[in-house]
Length: 140
Image (cartoon, one colour):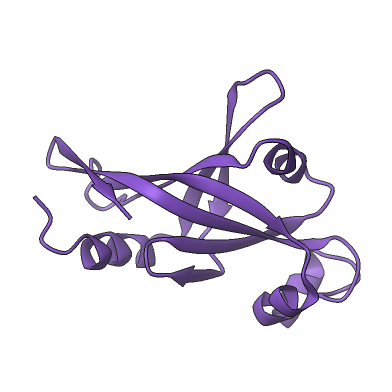
């Protein structure tokens, strides 16, 4: 059993360059996408990513905010964490400016103040941690 889920899970997440995020499509099927590491993390409850506003994922999260994110440690193969929760699409200018980096201009036209830059905010409610061929559920 994990002694400190926030520390154990947070440490795993901080060492990963890729996250998998899942949404639900209009037919109720899961859709999974690899993303970079979160642009911002608040404990193991709240995570922020950025994406293009016309993306399929934005449409899906607006229609059904149920989501799942998954991080796995490639160094240890069978170690990972799944977090269940909701994904909110955020178009608030202050939030967007807070996450904006000049190097993002390669991906988004119009910068943080306009164009297609938008933020995804995931809020976890529970999780499942896998390590050494064992798993355990935890609340966030």
